[in-house]
Length: 286
Ligand code: URA
Image 1: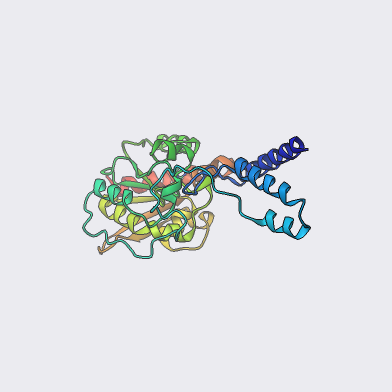
Image 2: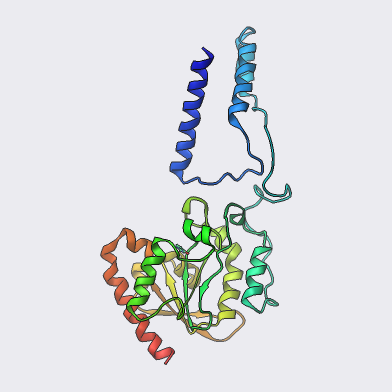
């Protein structure tokens, strides 16, 4: 009887896990690991003991929270893992005047809990003096592992697109709207974007690019405050106002490479965008 019960428990545990994996869960975010096998076995034993009592008691026992087991937190207890997901206070970054200091200030920033599920901060790659700043959405799995933006499949496509117009990572600078990977590559929430936006704005001000390329809709909406999709926004450029500065920087909007991998029919339009980028570059960065 108990063999059958433990086989069923195991099956339902596996089904729960599979369900979470299907949803994209790939990290545990509780401060302490919980061994559900032990917890359930304890609850089972408890329930079996109560079976001899009346059925009301059995119902009560089955609702009782299983004991928490074992507990070597992998982060300090004070870490606000389950607290508000975003900062309530906008960080003042005016004194942050180098890219290294900006990366450091992100490392010590506690206002976005993505930081605690991510493996690495993904700050930027490429040449900050190139004059061209590419801005994507958020790191994926490969980027999170390596701590560099656009190093996975969409990064390889991006590299090929850049090569087509004579550019590479030495002649562009690449970052993302979010510096930490959202779990399971889910879309960033507006709260996460708002929490990290002051850092991106400071990033753009410090790099002072001559041209920005927005890769995908999230970057375009965030930078331009527009609500249209990329299909409507692409094909021309817009002006981005630098923080605390009268200057504006042209922003070209194109498809996100990950979208192009899913919708190859759009590659023709993306190629036209690359040609427009090359033309703007020859006008702006002669
Ligand atoms: N997608 C992004 O938007 N950024 C990356 O760095 C990788 C994939």
